[in-house]
Image (tube, rainbow, N blue to C red; front, side, top):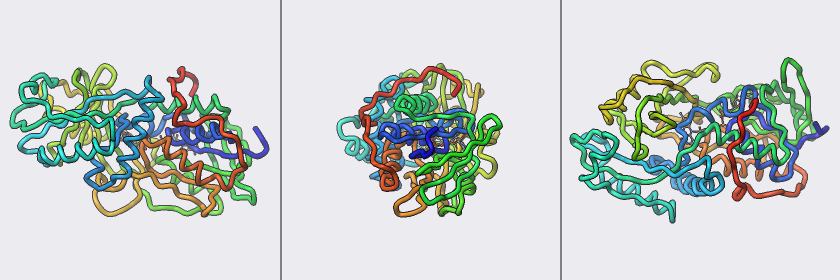
Length: 391
Ligand SMILES: Cc1cc2nc3c(=O)[nH]c(=O)nc-3n(C[C@H](O)[C@H](O)[C@H](O)COP(=O)(O)OP(=O)(O)OC[C@H]3O[C@@H](n4cnc5c(N)ncnc54)[C@H](O)[C@@H]3O)c2cc1C
């Protein structure tokens, strides 16, 4: 390891992998520390969508949706083995919260923001009984549009693999213990297999997802903090087959959006939103969350077996604010230690936007880093599935 690294990244989720890739491609010397395995945190427990976020339009988050739609197209182009276009159906019943004209207006705006790739259509009534056994009583309209699906863990590993190919030092089972500010950067301590190592870095990126607050607490002198909420989202995996694509439903209990999606040889249904307090490593599906998701599945696809074959919970990091979780902005927050920062924490964000977020982190750090020669541009760099390995 060099005497002075350019960047140390804490966390091997999609954001850490993305920053390590952007840094390595930018010619910087980068070390990534992941305490467990790559993607072990939220980045293997998401809804696995690469999407613009249709529902964020209701909150007026136009820029987020436009950027995410552009990133979706970039990822479809550079990672065709990992990100695939998927049809989504929005069934609207007499009891649905949103009226068909509202959904059509939202999809028209989504199409506008997606430019060339935003087709949507109303599914004709005569085709409704071909929609995977969707309940048709009181059904008033079904809209079909397109977004994309991924394997979040495989995508994270592929990005880390790409980073390593450009020279990033990726360490798993390597826990960040703490960092102390020095005149030229940070002195970082980390532990691997019982050994504590110290290294110097010009810049430090906290990409620890739900652990970001804990990581900030181990940095001296105390950097700026934000009040954060961890919000748990659970998915259930059940038997069955959806051959027409995914469904964007409204939970009967509270009208929250819930996706019912084809996933591997079964069906993935999620998600929930439950305030979480405790060790991020211990997040697990709650019985009431599972029952809630089973109720959604039963309401829309009465013929399906709702017995969970598996269930998993991920944690969103949301900046504390008033109002329902679903209405809080989903934009990523970059928390810096100074106007020309040497420490940046990535708070929240989306799988979909990881590449753009990484590019923004690098741009913010540029003034604290020496000039290096970029080796490639991540907008055009192909991502291929990494072979399974120790990470
Ligand atoms: C339920 C749910 C559904 C979602 N669905 C979608 C979706 O469909 N599409 C989308 O675009 N986004 C989605 N998101 C958002 C997306 O999943 C997250 O924004 C993203 O995965 C966060 O990645 P991350 O790298 O910031 O965090 P994480 O993936 O949690 O990675 C943080 C890593 O840091 C490591 N770490 C922590 N502390 C230390 C330490 N001391 N030393 C070393 N390593 C450490 C952890 O082990 C972990 O691997 C969803 C989020 C949730 C919760």
